[in-house]
Length: 203
Image (cartoon, rainbow, N blue to C red):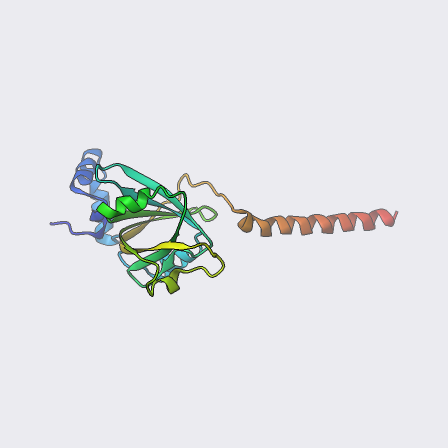
């Protein structure tokens, strides 16, 4: 039986050979036959992306040297355009242009999106297209509250995506995520202090 799965984007011939040697190939074969990875953005992925304020982006240069870049911004700065495409505005940073230079010769990209509070991670394989900021796409990715000049627009065609297991993901919270919990504790402390004061006044 020939294999023709979306997950083959990661499971190359060499990877499958290694899986065979280590005894995991049959399990991944059955997994793909039962529920292979997805290649379109569904509502679940759309919702997940809309809540992210950062992601990691991997590229490769002509000599095969990989590079991973952290990208951050307000929640939802990585925009879902349709079922196959993502996009974000690229602002001037440290002007190293490593990722951009890599994409000039190899458009393949890999995104790694983390949700630490819920211990989830999603990985996305795709292809990059770089647009000049004067195009219609600008209106779809611009953040009106961020006034820095946009150097370019980066559009990503999604070829495959999958959810990793939560094992070994430690829960971490941003200040924004943690503040409601702190507020609850502060309110509880204030309530207890009030009750203690009332009790002391009754003596």
